[in-house]
Length: 172
Image (cartoon, rainbow, N blue to C red; front, side, top):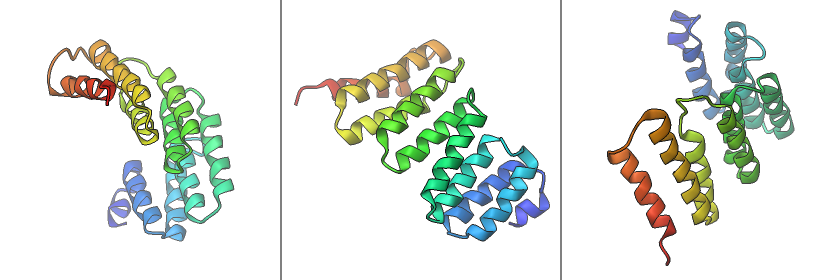
């Protein structure tokens, strides 16, 4: 709180504060911080929708959280971060089909050089479900991104993914 008072125009500080307040269940304070974030970033910024949804969810109003997260994506339909954020909310609720759908929407909206987080999340969901082939395919996409977008052709990171793929496809 002290940091945000000293740096009131620094939105990431307000977001870090929101993360802590929501996790601590300090929702009245979180709503105040959200108001400051809204003033800094605007009503339709995906961060505003994300935090508003998590505040509603923490308060037990899951229907309102869903409405806010859906609005976040509707306000930012081409922003891959919004889709990834929506997917994360679904994944945290174990709504895995919805999460994978939104992760794929995020992937479709990224431009090179792309990040691999969405594919890695899909792989983790597939592992939770026992879908070894689905996880292997997601890791193959990670390898394609590392090679094609980042020019990574060797090294521990790439080898780790290739080893994961091999292990996932190993017959038990």
